[in-house]
Image (tube, rainbow, N blue to C red; front, side, top):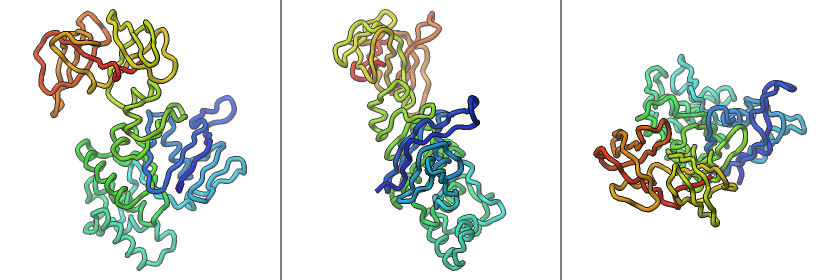
Length: 357
């Protein structure tokens, strides 16, 4: 069953010739128990879409349904107020009341809804227990760590059992180490409680780790959507391929094409690649993930010979940069399990992993 459905949504700021279009006909749905990540660069429209669903932005046209309720219909000029949509919302800043205890912060929404005090206490205790915060109910926000404050914000969104929880970059305020731990906790919580969630993020690793499906937005439109693995391994466009991983880009000229097999001239080297997306002709861009580049000290097929420029230690591996000294741009990056000695290397680019757009 669809918990959330957005159809052909348009939203702009301003009027007339000065209007700035933010959403340009976005359609999506969210199934019960599913987590969908809205992913994209700054200005792509992902946060605006989330806020439109929440009732914090007014679209120009289209429809929004939550379950069997219509909460926005542009043609009928109908817009349900945010407080009547019964959605859980976790803000990027957490927005906790500094003068209220954890329990009071979590129960505040229930108090506004005139829920009896004993019922509030019961539900607050239950949700704090689910998030491992049962012993912190009497503390104030300033007495909590960043990760604990984040959990309080999530508890406040969950306490009245909303049909959909909206997460606006929920991990962005955490440091790198805590962010990884919170990512695992959030995914486990969502699965355990069977939540339906719509999450905004600009971090592709975060989107892939937490979501069941990704909607990649580009300039107010959905560029591509699908399961994280398919988005990463089978991008439909250069934009998707670039956004979903760490890559090498190689400008080249198409020599010939036979089906999906493309022969390219890349800086004087003849390379074989696989066509992806639309028509590939004339000048093209080849792209390959860093982890797909194979480093060899002997000549190899479909490879480019380059001198090693530098290596950077990443903990579990080394990231190595290969670059001709006389070239101002270009070069290739690849991962190695150990630090490489100075010298020239053959960088093999497997045909099926060298995508041509």
